[in-house]
Length: 266
Image 1 (cartoon, rainbow, N blue to C red):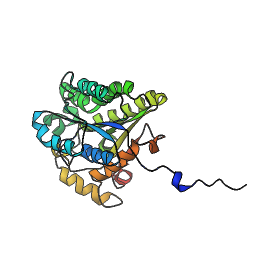
Image 2: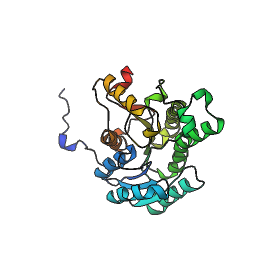
Image 3: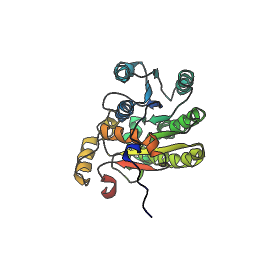
Image 4: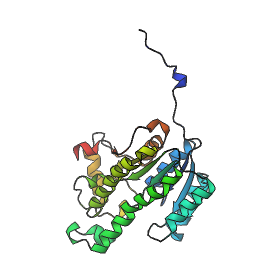
């Protein structure tokens, strides 16, 4: 029997037209979150973008305006009510939400630069709250707005799976983030909501600048990666745009590496 030939003109191409997405975590034009927002917007998505506080607004607002963001708001997840206010505005303006990109992490400097063994209780709780639990809060708030399904994406790092020198307390925190991703994917999957983690290799971002000897880490990772080069924010952004599209409707519950293959040899 002859195979049925599907005209290539009928095969869908990547388009986010009509999709509404919230991006949390842009600090400047070197942020992974900005790369994601840029590529999602380039593929037609309408965006809501947050900035941390008044100090950060001067860096983020011009970027958000350049992306024609419909919503630009402050959001410090450690401040009571700010995350909820963002989702309330999304509901008011759009009445729906198709994707969330969560790219925030924080630990006190003394905990980040010290041994995991020495991490303070309060410091560990703070790092977990901002870097991990805030993603769970986003999922809870997004769930009723994702009436036709959607995608939740967070950003992890290889140090959550293997010991990476100087990554310290963020290793256990990222491990918890990846585990949370799996459990939420299982819980929200029946509603068509997909939950994923992106794991880029070392990138020169503002957040990474707080990690001791980070330049050395980047050089070592590039040398070991099969491609001998690291990913950049455009690599992360283009992949994120695919993952929030309908073309990735069967991808959920996993951590996806964008690191030139570093994770297979690291």
